[in-house]
Image 1 (cartoon, one colour):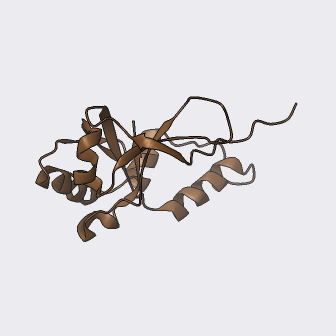
Image 2: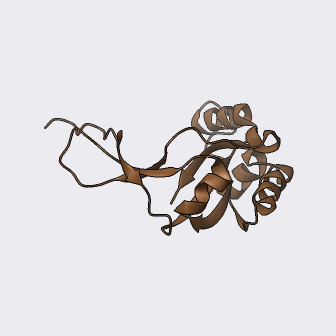
Image 3: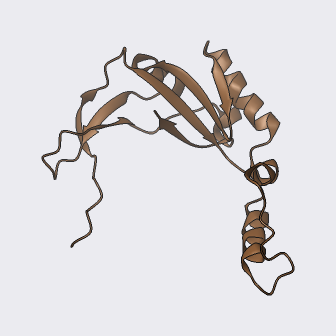
Length: 146
C-alpha cells in the first residue's frame, strides 16, 4: 500500500466568511531548548545516573516555557487592539471573527483546497505573511487558527 500523499492546500477559493468564529493562537517562543535536549538524552541513556528519572510536564514547562513577561507583552498587544487574550500553556488565544483577523495580523483569512484532489475539504490560512508589532515579533514562534 502506498503512503498517502500530504495535502497541498494552495488553491484559493475565497475569503472566509467575515462572521465565522475563529480562535487566533499565538504560539510563543520557548526557552532552554539545549537544556531540554540534554535532559532527554540523560533520561534515555542507561549509562546515565539520570536514566529513567523522567520529569513531569509541569517541570519541563517551568524551565522551557515562555517567561511571564513574554505573555504580558503579547497580551498587552492584544488588549491594545480591544481584544481579550487568554493565556493557555505556551500560547495566547484570542477568540474573534474572521473579519477581525486583518486588524490583529495585517492579513486576510482565506479558504484553500488541494487542487490535486477532488476532495471538498478546505483549510483556513492567511493570504500573506502576518505582521506583528516590533515589540512582540520576537516573542511569537508562529500563529495558528482553530
